[in-house]
Length: 467
Ligand SMILES: Nc1ncnc2c1ncn2[C@@H]1O[C@H](COP(=O)(O)OP(=O)(O)OP(=O)(O)O)[C@@H](O)[C@H]1O
Ligand SMILES: [Mg+2]
Image 1 (cartoon, rainbow, N blue to C red):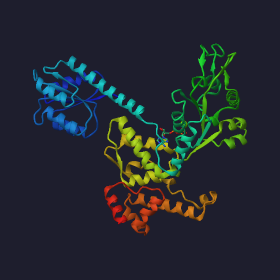
Image 2: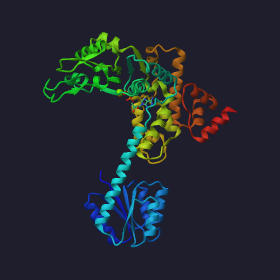
Image 3: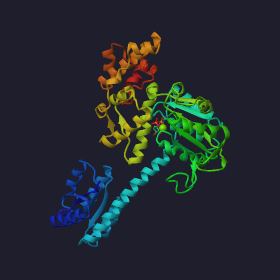
Image 4: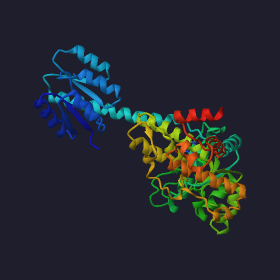
């Protein structure tokens, strides 16, 4: 995308000359004639850089700059100062301007300063994104019973050398579990090497896993180390293991049995010590019955099975995860975190999240980019498909052999959430519609692991309930 530049100068000649030369440089350029117009323009979307004249009728350039900073406008600013007016230029820099150019304007010099200013802005953004990625502590967020159990299992499995097989639907956090196991193991200083068995073409997977010798097949122009060898002393993560072909399964099995491997086209076997952690979203037992997966490999891999539950079964973790991702994206985009109003909170807790944590994370990133204010409402989430929201059916209860008690709980939970959404998260109205005491509603929601709301008024309400 073209960088956008806003020129603020009261002289029409300066505006048109600068606009022309900056447009020729490939920027998208707008121009206004006063500080007031500049502030007004900034309420209607972001620009990358503002070229701001110090001498303006009405609000001058420095006052405008101060206002922009108060409003957290993060555009880069270049000042145009009168000749010899070093004092105001210094003040401008203190207010966070990138640089200044003196009048009479040299267009060449201005273009250079603009280019540098935009480059610095881009570098800062990249830097922030990188730092956010590095900082992103790979912690497993969640306080639900299921999550606490999962963390416990991970902590127990990690220090052993035992092979781990991680099960879970798409996006539940299987890779995060694998990385956490590695990070908590004695192998943490060696490599964690990931192999996506579903993404690598069948004819390349052996070379990918075991390496190849130059000339062993067309395209093998040099020797190459395989992933098993790279993971020597560390952990190899075989992701989507259910998608590995039977032929490759046989080779992997041999590596696991003998702890040695042979590169494609190689003549010697080398010894490797890589801990295998595998993951799948398939039912491997069914794959075995269907003849798609080797039972002997399954037994080798499945020493420590770990099951990562779908997000809809740990709804109380949803607000925690949402806050976690919100903070992460705020850092990455250099913006403030947005809160969820009660209606929005009800929706995200009630939505079934077929894509699990990954889908939630994507939705939060989308909100960070698309929602202008500091708070997110149910309207901002209208893109989520609400049709599967009420998921309770007699058939479902029958199929799952639910007890009357569990079936009733599920129905009550869905009905409360649905009503809450309809009432935009208002607890009093929800209680009224459902014909229960508000205190009763709070108690029910807590037993279902639902978070009523974090709005101050409702906290007061909750206070009333307690007394
Ligand atoms: N409990 C959690 N706490 C914090 N972040 C999480 C948690 N679970 C998953 N994530 C994040 O959600 C995203 C998806 O997780 P991950 O890639 O581990 O899932 P997966 O099960 O491997 O998904 P897929 O099936 O799509 O490969 C990642 O960004 C991950 O960091
Ligand atoms: Mg994965």
